[in-house]
Every structure is written in C-alpha cells, then in structure tokens.
Amino acid sequence: MTIVAEDDTIRIEKLELGPFGTNAYIIACRETGDSVLIDAPGEASVIIGKLENTTPRYILLTHNHMDHIDALPQLRTQLRIPLAAHAADAGVLTPPPEILLSDGDVVALGRLEVAVLHTPGHTPGSLCFGVARFLISGDTIFPGGPGRTNSSADFRKIIKSITERIFLLPDDTQIHPGHGKPTVLRREKEEFAVFASRPHDSQLCGDVLWLSS
Picture 1: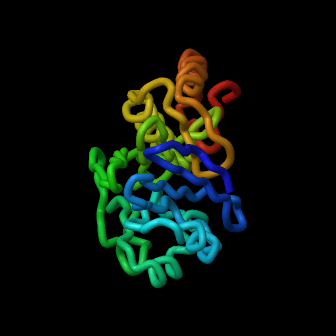
Picture 2 (picture 1 turned 90 degrees about the vertical axis):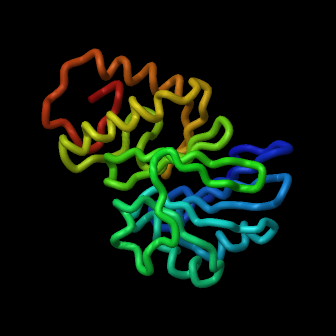
C-alpha cells in the first residue's frame, strides 16, 4: 500500500495486488468521503477493507486484461456499485458494465472530477483517468516507454494516444501506471523526443523503451 497523494481535497492510494503485482488505485474525495476504485487485479477482500472508511461509487476499468479484472466478480457482488469501462473492452466482461465511458467524459466524485481519456493501443478500449495533477494510466504509458503492443498497427495507435492525448497534459502531471513505479510527464516527453529523433523498423511493436529501442 502506498499513499500517492493526500491533502485537504483528495486522497489516492495504490494497492499492488494479484500474482502479477498489478496496481489498483482508490481515489477519495476528502470533503465527501466518496471514492472510486480503478482496476481490480485480485485480493478482493483487501480492496474492500481499504474502501471501508469511504463511500464507493464506481469501479473504473483501464482495460480488460485478466491481471486487471481478476477480482471483479467478487467486488461487483459485494460492493454493488456500477462498473464503468470503454465499449471496445466491454465484450469480455460478464455481466457487462453498467456504464460505458468515452473520451472526454467526466466522472463526478464528490467535489472532484475524474477526466476520461481513451488511449487505444494496448487494448482497443484502454482508458486513462486524470484527476488534479495525477493520471492513472493503466498499461498505456510507463516510466521509459509505452505499454506492450502486439502489432505495429497497435504500436502506432498507442504512440498516437500518448502524443495526442497524454502529452497535452501539464508537464508536472504525475503518471501512475498499472504496474511498477510512477513517473512524471515532463520526463516521458523528453525521452520520447529522443526516441522520435531516431529511425525505427516499420514493424516495431512489443516491449518498447524510449531510450533503447
């Protein structure tokens, strides 16, 4: 458990859960106590325990890969709150999400607003969630590079998502990904500039790093 942010208005907690050490995040409005859970990697009882002193309103899903949804069935049964995801990733979810999110949507959370960014590439329906100066990025961007892609077409999509959506945010935005440690947007833009200055194989995909790929 790591406290990502805590002040008079917001509290963000990171939980590293499940066999793949996937990050889930709880964002809470300090004024109202309302909270959202972002992703459900596993260990539902741990997540529920961390939500106890808040009023959970939604489960938000960055994408539909198993290491991000393993605890969904138990959480949906016990919490009885809406699941929100992008339509392009909703097909494998049973029952389907109660809310379908699109780019530009805003999720109200007490006095806070959570901005929805559609960032396809890792999956067709990948989403990032922005609140204040923080971005929960799922598997779209990590320290040093984008999320894994399975084809050159997907790689081009994720680069477009990063450069045309995420890179428009303020440079001091703190990025908190679906695995591992956080990064700062300014650093990723600087390293991407190095990547973009070099020629690359037209079929590039997979695990790519800005400075060494």
